[in-house]
Image 1: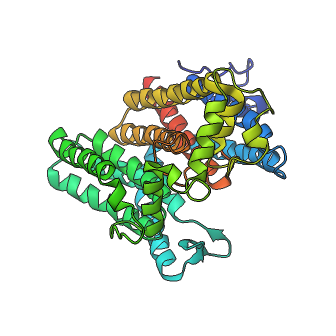
Image 2 (image 1 turned 30 degrees about the vertical axis):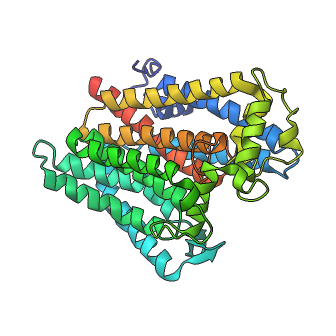
Length: 393
């Protein structure tokens, strides 16, 4: 659907555009279905946050403010043509990696993790790579279009693994998973042959089966897995058997599943969640807000949320398929993957099918940094949608 600008008044060819015309140009070319999906998720997010954060200070007001900031970022980024984004890909990626190196050398450590650096303001550079890495990889494959060889995919893998390795070393498993998923999506959409994809997938499945079978011996106290930090090993073991430590490390998963299960088909009702308001759900406004939604709105509310995410991701993939350049297609596809990974990992960990990692639920969870990332991703998708319509016209 091509947005049409309202006609200028008679005799206004050389007149300056009115304020209404300037505002219209900001929205012209926006993808309507994508905006509708985002609007529904924003409405759900505000509704659930009002209940979950009712006695949690100013969380609801701050959540609304974060959404407004993300909206402004969306509007600004949507006005930037994909060609300019491609030109900025390498500088943004280089700055992001240099900041990760600076974090490793001079970073601020909190709760055993070194993820932040003080540059006048304290920032978390790993968040930059959620967008910078897909930009860099998409630009790389665009430059190699028509002459792709396996060596190009190997270089792309190096571009991917450098920041992912630095982020995992912090350690930050949640962010490294998001960055890894976005990067792998670009490599996959660029045309990587299935014979290179299936072997690692097969090994991963075999590893999970072995882990489940060997769980009693692998999860004994004092066993060192070498490849994972101790807290990461404990999270995996807790996932396999939350009852191992029901009042400690397994408390999050157990309470999340109790809340979701107690909601039943229709839920307990808005503001009526006992697990939520009696504070049995840890991090009920951030990582575990899906449990609060499931308790108060039940299976029906969960299905509405899933349908909203499904439509958002579907629309992002449609924008990717219709994009006019390889760079735009790869970038839009990676943005769709970011939304999928956020939603799948968060709902999976709250439901007890994935280990607990610090991944928020898009538009629902409280968090300013994550909301900025979402605003950037949506702005990129809107920009690509606008560029498609400019090509058509």
